Image (cartoon, rainbow, N blue to C red):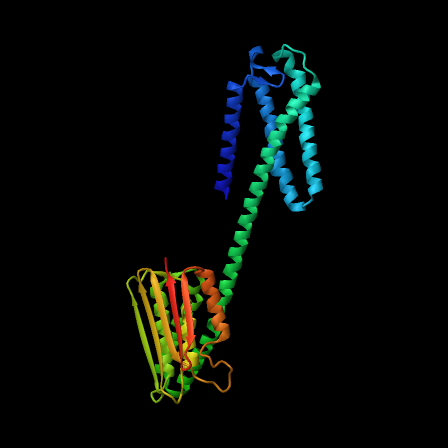
Length: 346
């Protein structure tokens, strides 16, 4: 921001200096002042100072106040006072000091005022154009900053909703293992839970992680789910992951809701079920396919294979992060629920 301000000051200085040199070096007459009668630099310098004063009074101070107060009548009154006040002062100075030395003709105060007013009207028009354009850019920049902050807050909120259900299931699993199997298996579960929570607590606080980290998190989650399934349960889990570059970047916790959902709604204690998870990263494109059976739940209305809230949260995150770089297809074929996601990782 400071660099931009310095650049603005430098550009303005160059423009004013260049304008002064052009007028002082090439213009023959300014109102009642003529070059052939003497040194032309002094009246040009005085006129430039008045022009600078008028320009920044309008473009910086008055337009800035107008943007805060939003009073058009007050703004019009202020610029009129500034224009006429500076014009009168400049006219008196020019008429008193310069025509006697630079003009062979007797010029009236009125004619000097008209010439000065016409020139100052030009400066006023430039100042108004510059000031309002600058104010518009500032307003747009603030809107973008607010939009970015809002999106960031919404993403944090959506990510936060991914974790509680998963954490609850993991802690139940550790408790069950501790009361049933003993220390060794429980220690293994706790170690995996620790890895999962470490990723959720620390890596999810940044905008993106390598695809390798996201895959490790998914593999750890699936490993924990397999530990929940007893040997007599007719459940098959197929996990197929491949990538041609493990440094691809992806927002953390973006894929896990689809996979968590498959286990939440696709496991049956009685009927044979199969959960298929396939992730493939090739040529800057990620493809995720998740298939799970649709299990009817007597105690819940969520019998369509996907949580309504979960689905909406994932769609919102994808629309924010990949507004035109993703394709999400979710289908329910009656007995099987399929998620197909394609992301452009560039």
